[in-house]
Image (spheres, one colour):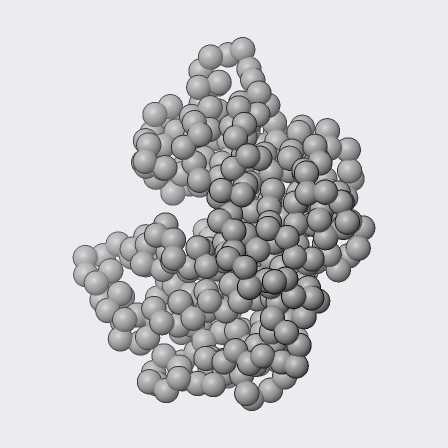
Length: 380
């Protein structure tokens, strides 16, 4: 039986009334508990775009070092779920499978993308179509179509997608794939999605041009939506991707600064696309800034949590000297780093659930709740 949709769980630490994000990141903007690991090439991800990062003075006292050298489970780090006087945030019915629910809207996704990328030159067409073979997970478009339907129902409409919302789902996959093409060139990668990378097959120059062409086609599709606010929101994604890549090329000497650098970079490279795509589809159907912020914050938190299962892979990419990987991984294991990473991922997923549960109940909303659980158990 569905329960009134405005009610929520209150997540508390038993210590203060700080928000869940402050609980994750530390009091008053301090580094999160996993900060100590950032000096070894890993870190917990928290934060958002530049306008959403804390502007409060930085407290130089790091709680990360204490946690990683202590076996105590702090109440700050391990909050307990306490039901407030209100009721549960979502229906007791079994949550819908997000992939099944979104499948109908994604059946023609890659065909639509190939139409956008139509060119007469056969080699460029082969380059652009290479990753749009229908074998991808379409994780981002799936979130976008579910968010669109959830916002439509919340706004007293039927759940059918608007043409502009369908276009945003397609554009999100195009931007994501273009960024992968460019990333592979920068990283010198030779494998992607079980295939040899474009830069290995056709060379770096043609790979860069192919990524640029995909982005240009996505920009043209975006312009055709005809909503200036949506154009502005999704243009921010492209800027964030570029800035995030530049940030990844740099580093910080100070531990606290390095961690904050990692947080912002992670938002820009991964979460910004999901967050702003979710916001864009909400803009097309609802002018309420609160609804738009719910959509953004859900996408942001899921996008950040999406990175945590890759801890081991991040460590392995970061170290090159013989023995460094084994020593670093052993350090993480001995310092409860994996537990802390899993906990932080769970925290972001809880916040995503809290946000999306503010929308009116619908199968799509419940599927987005279910999706947060799947993010935590994914392999890669």
